[in-house]
Image (cartoon, rainbow, N blue to C red; front, side, top):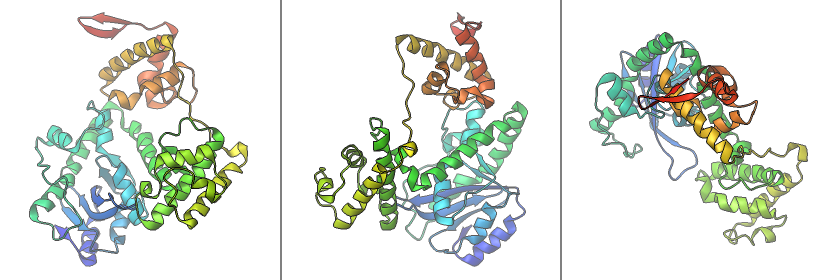
Length: 376
């Protein structure tokens, strides 16, 4: 059903309050705006499916109540962007949360498995993705568009049931919790302007003092883009931000010497200089730490090659996608004794870390048998 009024939404949500599972997906646009323009929210239980017109219904509070109901598990596929859009538009993060893409990685499927491949694997249904580039802000939506939208959620409750059974049977349900929490933390982190410098491209060469400037300038850019509702790169590109951090101009005149900023408004120039000054004058004890990647040499590279070979054997043995267990950088961190390595505790240690410790200590080895690598 297509819900385009508050009364329709409220009636639907009243019926849904007894559900134990609510599948969720969103359709939005953000190519020319800072804030994603939420156009459609699709939800489904085992018995009903609906497409909610977020453009027509200003008050989505009945749906928000469902999203915040601890008795209802909210099921997404690749939830990251959906959570960000819902948080931006409705001010909440749906919980408890389940992500079928993440679960698939724990159940022997590849990392970042697409929704179409998931439905094909679990339901034997081939989805028609012809409307993937639809402008969801245009009204009216035709029957084919609504069918496409509803298919994004209608299969999820059944797939969730089967995945839950498999995760419980394999003893992996608890593995999901820290991974889902990390996704939520990442969404919340991106919402804080003071953390936006963490995603600044080409910032690896900056000193801690320059990173302090980057934190302030990126926060200003984020807030300016939010106020104007335009993409942040339209306010100022990353390479210009990095150049500002290197030069640390303390006057508008010096700021304008940087290529690409000669036409900047007086107000923006003054605010950027204020941001630079805040970064420069910050207590050095509060400068951001530089996130160094573990340095490698020829010997360590060879060790990492061997570790990665063992990781593939371990991943194949337990049916968990290799990138979900560890990246090559994670292996380097573990090999060099970083106590904060993701392989040092939790389910990753049980699956891989303890075996890799044996490899590094010489207690465990690898061999080739019948054309396959096996552990000794």
